[in-house]
Image (cartoon, rainbow, N blue to C red; front, top):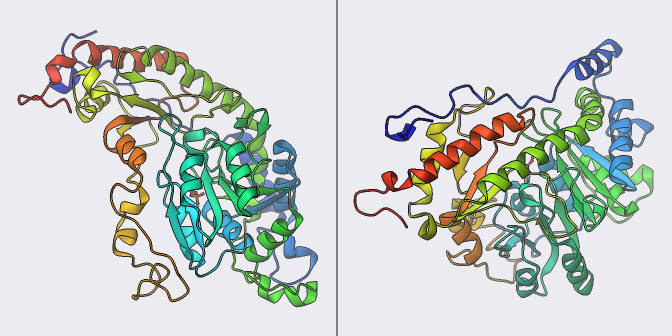
Length: 440
Ligand SMILES: Cc1ncc(COP(=O)(O)O)c(C=O)c1O
């Protein structure tokens, strides 16, 4: 190993790119060709007809997903965002309502609330697991709160038992954004069987994918029906179907087509094996990187599993003696990225806390007059000031390192290079300290 850090002109630990994350193979090709041969690329009809539920593959995919998760219903969508949007609609959310959401997540977890002219209210996260903190949720409930969107961030389930108890106490609907957590387990139960509606993503970056796609599981017949209406032009269906409650029963075209559904069926059969590899890699890194003083591995709640969409480490600059940004820069210089991407495999922080985005700061979303934040329907006052969720801000601004080295088909050998890079930078970290003492 070169004694000089790559960032300072030395030889990097590794130059060979990490393997592309590509779970698509011959099985998917065959499945796609069968759909193409059939000529039926989608069979949805936006009318009350048996094709209201989509084609054979869409329905088979939903049955397979529901079976694997152990849920009564699974309703597919063209994305997780669409699934979340439909779930917020199915929950009956409307103008003047508030929906509690964590700020540490992909933006869609909150934007879907605005889609129903309701107001996202942000609750802070747990400092070790990074999912929403049930205590913060409790503090932020008001008479206007209608639902919660909780996120299984990075692949670790949110603390669902206290969250569900709180929701039942206040009559709130719980929508779980499990975009990053297929196959995760919470106290012996599979994610997808616990909250009122659980939404999974099948976009290209996820553990398994169909290019774009999403699927919602629920044990509730009414929610399943509402999800189907919102997915597929409900307003044109309600009369023939005898539905008289019209609240949020209108819809869009959020439908999955036959090719992604066919791919999804084969992808699902690969999920256990892909998760096993991913978890093994992540655990290796946790064990070997997480022993470096000042770099803590991810916490896994007892009785739960983490499926590591992202593997987060907590960095303590005071202990390491160099800034997080400088340390990350130095490790990235030691390692190439992967064949399928042109951005690094690790970063300082994850996302800007959502309330600090321009849409929330300026309170401009729908139209120019501040709807939904300053709508006549809304009787509350939004608070998106900096400092609103101090744990989130501290984690994002100073502590979190997000890594993705563990993606299959990377092996333990690949992880050894990652560990060597961390160890090398750690050993030479004093050379990184900026002239005016950059550790902060
Ligand atoms: C937590 C979370 N929510 C929502 C989404 C949106 O998913 P999709 O791209 O399938 O709409 C993502 C995607 O990265 C996500 O990670």
